[in-house]
Length: 267
Image 1 (cartoon, one colour):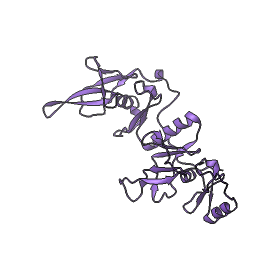
Image 2 (cartoon, one colour):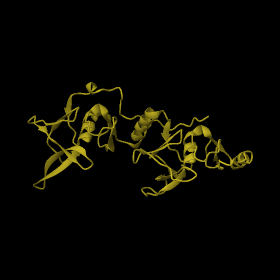
Image 3 (cartoon, helix red, strand yellow):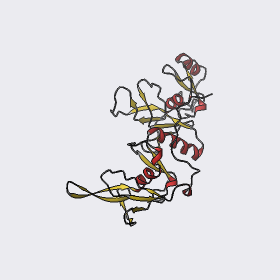
Image 4 (cartoon, helix red, strand yellow):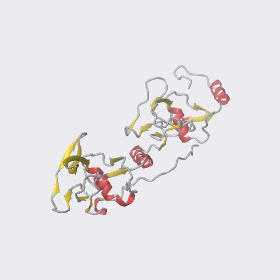
């Protein structure tokens, strides 16, 4: 039985909230303090200058992302900057739900359509826990696989906050927002970027076995001195119900009592 729990955090997206639940228009929060002109923004991404009521036209910036261009004066010269429409929208409509000075990490599109600018489809991400929480919710919604934040077998050495692990053995990267493909070979190995406890800010890759990731995340009795045994002995079946944590002696005994078949390799 697996029952390990990871801390729960709440993302800001509410699937039951429709466009009509948001105000039609609010004061715009432009994420560039150099822009002094006041604007209002609608819940479908239209921006209007307060003093004239004139609507500002969108532009498309790198990555095919809708944005607004702004002029500002600095050192006696006019300069230009661009801000994504979705950034202005979530900062404006979620203004009371984040602290002053909070950094917006990203904005996700719940409907997966980056061209649809509706506040009820946008997911503001201010913290890694919010990203973890939303992606777990979204992944569980898609196919029912139970995902959790990846847990390290050696938490005193490194942690894995940028990855989610499913109870069927899937690994989801919060860096690329995509499922990871294991390395080719007998076993499912994943090349991850952990957060090292004693190397703050240093980026180092680490190859981690898929079944160890699943066991560390889901099994209560998984410790640094434990080994992971696959019940059916299939080297790439990393579903949590196929895994048990054993001491080294128990693991050796388990293999000794299960002679290999011609088609199955020892795990």
